[in-house]
Amino acid sequence: MTDPRVTELAGLLPGLKLSIDAGDLEHHGRDWTRRWTPAPMAVAFPADIAEVQAIVRWANGASVAIVPSGGRTGLSGGAVAARGELVVSLDRMNRVLGFDPIDRTLTVQPGIALEAVQNAAREHSLIYPVDFAARGSCQIGGNIATNAGGIRVIRYGNTRQWVAGLKVVTGHGELLDLNRGLVKNASGYDLRHLVIGSEGTLGIVVEATLWLTSPPLQTQVMLLAVPAMDALMKVFAEARHRLRLEAFEFFTDRALAHVKAHGGQDPFDTVHPFYVVTEFDAADEAAKDAAMAFFELCVGEGWVVDGVIASSDAQASSLWRLREGITESLARHRPYKNDVSVRIAAVPAFMDDMQRLLAVEYPDFEVVWFGHIGDGNLHINVLKPAGLDNDAFVAQCEHVTSMLVETLRRHEGSISAEHGIGLVKKPWLSSVRSPGEIALMRGIKAVWDPNGVMNPGKLL
Ligand code: MLT
Ligand code: ZN
Image (cartoon, rainbow, N blue to C red; front, side, top):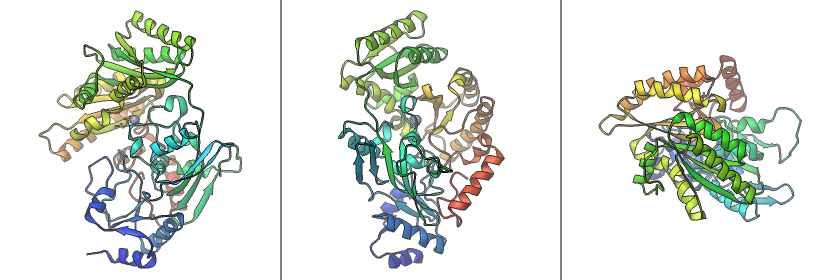
């Protein structure tokens, strides 16, 4: 039976596309975490800003919780609707609204896929440089709400660096036009940056103006085989010193085995404990010579035992696939995901401590390491053994997370580098943010969303 509040909303906004179809509820009620059973009351598909505003205002009056919904590729449960919420999907607001060649900005609606933003930038011989494997499915509104990172942060920073302006409907239903593409704007608190990374708890992004930049002239992709964990950061230090890096990512033999089982092509004859995939500028002979000198030095030092440089775009994609295919190849094992970060300089000591902890705590579980090691961001995925009940598995992993948090505290790191707190990491927020910080966050939430309709239960 239809919830009477949905009937009321439909009566109030007759033009609004609303669905209570079981398939839509299931599809739009979950993200990639797959831990919660989707149970939204309905899914609304607004077509414009006015409809978003009307929905939010109605939700305030009707005390209905809203879950803003993009591509739902998130890994922290931030877009899960499991408690009768109204999902507000931005799927229909997916257009490019304009390009400004002088400002070099692209203005888009929030439901546009990241890949479509990247393609639109290329039409103007520019790039939108934020990039990660979910580019075809994730949406820019979700990228902004989570301050998405990815594989090129080392060169270009997180999503935050590329947001020139934002239109946001607050939890109260007010439309804010934040920063308006200004490069310089010293007029008080920059509210745009509060929204970026707020995980849908303050308002809904309804339009974004993004800065674009020039593409690198030419890059090269190199895959390196690394014999030991302690060599990884030595290789990184040399790479950063000698090359202009676009990306520096690592993964383990276990990660590679899963990707290979999904069709990934391993260019090496033997298995190695660690791999690095790195991309760097190689526009002239000097840059290419620097890359060879870097490789030879690493081999000479014993930090690298084999390597491949891509000689075509196709080979570059195939090397990248070994890194980018990891998440998908692990998905069927329902991995428990840790997405942690420490300062780059703290990575070696942190990895040593973590390896010791995990060897003791997960003797029987398969643990897969990969990630953005050049940013100090490690993804540590624990795979569920086939026979183990999911709840028991999660409980055991959460117990270990509590210990991991101690290690993170010692190294002054974060429990979430890029996936966000959402539902998954909520119990540990207080381990990385002080009581003073959390009190301020709650205060900010109360001002932006006084009736608590915006993604309640997530983050805070
Ligand atoms: C990645 O780096 O591949 C993404 O953060 C996804 C993941 O951690 O699985
Ligand atoms: Zn990542």
